[in-house]
Length: 64
Image (cartoon, rainbow, N blue to C red; front, side, top):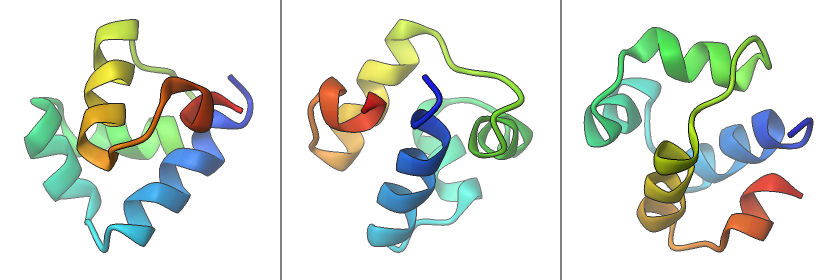
């Protein structure tokens, strides 16, 4: 999921959403969002699907 971190950052900024707002929508900590965007950790599949729902994109767009 090497592109995931870049795509998450892109779609979050395109939606003019802060890390805090996205974290609240996903029920995770703001630190999680930061770690994902830096490529330190990755979310589980259920969280990936929630991210896709929030940004109204397919999983392929998020991961590739």
